[in-house]
Image (spheres, rainbow, N blue to C red):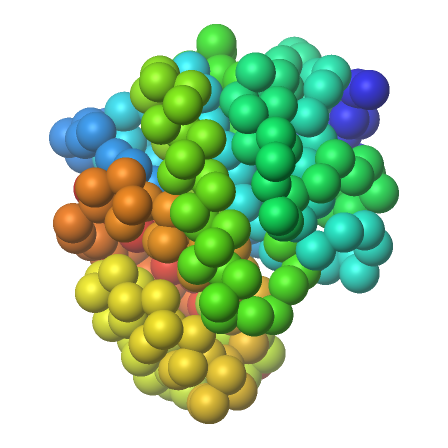
Length: 269
């Protein structure tokens, strides 16, 4: 299948015209950042007006390989708990990119969790808005899009283990992109306080602490599941540290600090 662009346009998440999209992204990237070899990166997925600065500064730090697994939450409620697009291509304003079918097939083979399922991908924005940033830096990328809607810590760890095993078998450089916004629709100060609590757990690469802090404190981080799975995977792939690159809330761009969404960007090495 060709997964069609859904969320691009003048009144949508990001520009649909290639030349405007390129200029928009160039306004967010930080050319002063030194590029590093990373196992994973956590990026926000809101409209570029709100989260583009954090996304751009964060991805500017990363040396982007040709193969990327993107882990995203499920905002539509459709499909399997671990849904993969395993064949075809992904349409963007910059041009179509390929689904990395070899890696997807390895991941699906004998997996307890991952299933080929188009349904949750068709209208989900949390992967779509990440792709142009990645494509801007590497025109040759191919992706394995994964949407996660499970809620179990033990399953996250086991699913992460399956990703790690697939990456090892694939035997080529792979970047895992974790797509997540942070606290939703609270005051700027409340969001910052809660998000710092979560960011500390991510920096420690402590999946259990992350999971428990999000749920015990009712923190509305939409990408908790992808983060837990992604961190579980990269720890098995040798990750040893995570670093916060940037944090803002929507209030920093809109000027409305009464009800904001938090955006964090972290790299994991």
